[in-house]
Length: 104
Figure (tube, rainbow, N blue to C red):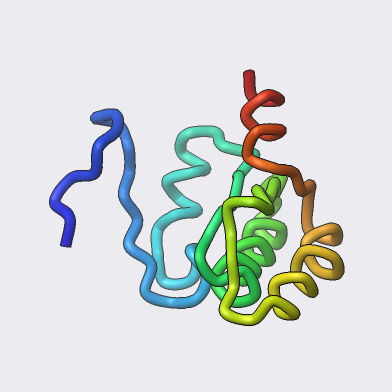
């Protein structure tokens, strides 16, 4: 367990114990209290954790951006399916560099 990750003192750490980052956590409360309307997602299991979190983000009304070069999956076909079939329905996709450029 990590006591404190490197970052800003105001950073919030949410421990996810399910596939999606919203289920069973207070992530939505933290984001809404701060007026967050846009989320950028990355992750290790494209077709499981990232997709679950992307769907929940969309359902909660957030603008969803997916950094497609900052995620992977155990199965290449599952990864490609999420990138080409699921994610375009939930939000915008781009590379990390493209997203960072847009964020300024």
